[in-house]
Amino acid sequence: MENQAGRVVVGYDGSEPAQAALAWAATEAQRRGHPLTVLYVLDYLGMIPSPMGPFGWPDVNDEDVARIAKDGAELARKSAESIDISAVTQVAQVAGALIDFSQRAELLVVGTRGHGEFAGAVLGSVGFAVSAHAHCPVVVVRGESNASLSGRPVVVGVDGSSGSDEAVRYGADVAASAHSPLSIVSAYQTLASTVWAEASYVDLEAKGGPVFDTVARESAHKVVAAAGEMARNAHPELTITEQVVEGLPARVLASAADGAGLLVVGSRGHGGFAGLLLGSVGHALIHNAPCPVTIMHSS
Image (cartoon, rainbow, N blue to C red; front, side, top):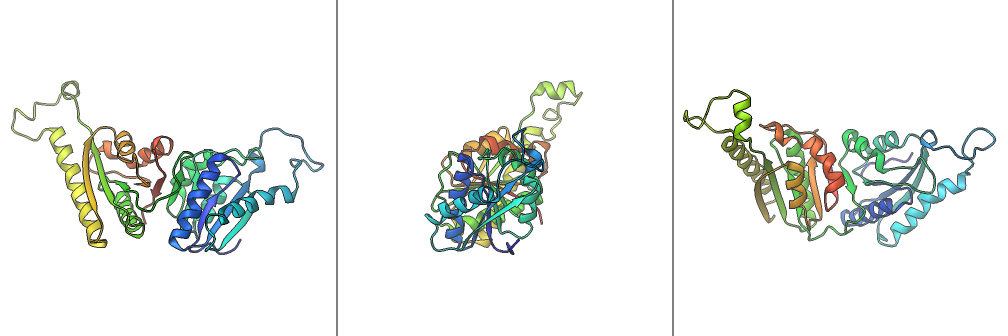
């Protein structure tokens, strides 16, 4: 395997979602001026029952397998002529191979789901494993996503955790390089009075103490303000908006990302309140976000 340092690596299996991921990766690699690797992984162990060859392997030949990555590379060259593009084929467990490539890659890009010409080359089903365990930022490109990022807003979900700090730094860098505005969003959730009653809590408001809803809202505002300051210190030229919205984090972020070019969240997060966990939210957004989602990992 060639050295993938500094390269954008895209998982490709010929399916429509993989083609969308390829288009996005090629455009982004060219925008960054980084080389692109089109990676096709054939997982024999994950294949459904099929006609078998003389030695127990599926009845496919090396040229058929290698052709998928090569076709993907040729397709990428149509929109990214100025960068180096290589085609790589591996016979391995798909998630493991992608995670291994992520150790040296600058960025790893996958589709939401995929099923190419060979069963077992399913990229969508490994998206969760890859986003959770990759060693570099992972972009999950939804099939209906527009391939262009430049000029479209970059949205970052924050909760005050180290994971969301990584997301802010990355989102600010991407927005600055793409000449895009940056939107920093935090969600908070309220608790109904019945919850307090069932939990045998006293009426904190009557006692003059802080109400949970107020504390949650104020905490979210502090998190957003700190994230905004971090982004401005790194890129004073950025146009930055800050939003604090009541609601379920996944729904809030999906709504905020409508019309955006990229949504960035941490792979795991735990701010001041349990409702601000971004790890599970990131997984939910892979299915529901209206734009590509970047999953960041704490250093």
